[in-house]
Length: 231
Image (cartoon, rainbow, N blue to C red; front, top):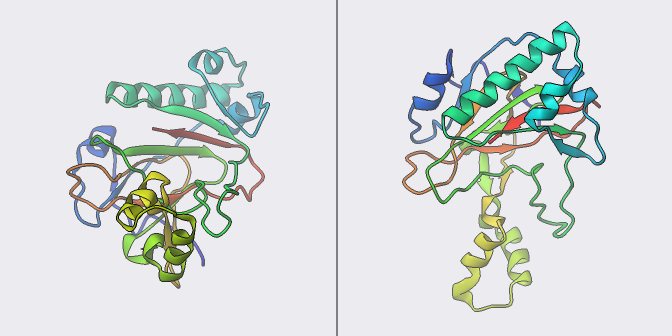
């Protein structure tokens, strides 16, 4: 299963206002503010001290970094992106990531972020994300994905974990987030989101007029630290 670039498959906009105001509908559930950013984002990622595999960069820590001229250009972009999203009413988080923890609770059904999944919210909000350096996220067209809980052999495995009444099985799938995960169909082509572009992805929320966007975090194959903004 090979990935592909997004340029020929996903609508793009040229400014933040269009990114946040363009309505989603049907299978149109991902939108990209395509950008060519300047600055050294890797310098910022590499100057953050990691005690584990992942760390949130607080604004004060970002501002305190001693950076080269290229690093300062990158920092200005990060600060501006945070301000844009905060003014929109979002709560963006800037992360440096070596890798995520893998889910080992259900070997036949991992529910970590490396699995293709959709985001769910009780209120009408979308997911925003941007990878500035490192490996980039992927999305999968809904027509190329199948909800795992509907695959008979997987559904049977899940039933073996459930000991309650039949009428509570669907709630069990939702409570443990099994229903959020998807399996690529044969010959599916995940779309790489690239570096520097700010993305808006549709979530599963009340009154949504589009399908939620199926996406996943990348395996960190490049060996680089990943600098990610998400909310």
